[in-house]
Length: 201
Image 1 (cartoon, rainbow, N blue to C red):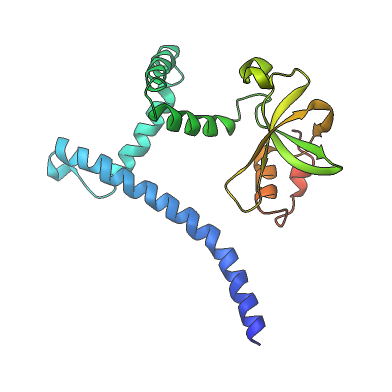
Image 2: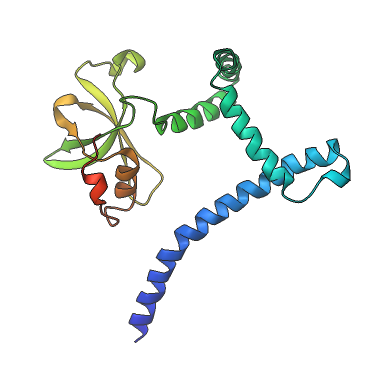
């Protein structure tokens, strides 16, 4: 009886927890936006024009406008110039570049970047993500035209290994990045949808 109750409770937690965490993240983003933008608006606007939630709305509009501005060549050049300054600041450049590279990794417009592959090591096959194929962008001691950098994530952990793998030991995997990352991080428990089985890498 107690085992059945425990199993049911665990099933409920596994079902509810992802929903709760997602809602909490959205709540945190909205609350932070309201505190920051709301404070600015309360200072800049007459009190009669302000209402709760205006800061969140202003934050969403600001993010949307930034996205529109980044489509302009001049704005992208100015942004790149600003990034160049950040990359010269000690400590900050290490933190910013790591976060920037992580988000770039998941940018869908990057062709052949983060491509899902199957890596064969000691007759074992693992799912990995190609992070770098250009030898010129690797450290000189790692430059090998016959190898690529592959990231192998660890299940249920924020971490993994980045290995230089010979091209002969990798092959395409018929999964897109989202499906492959979800599959690996949950140790395959989630399985793969039928739509994902027919997707191209």
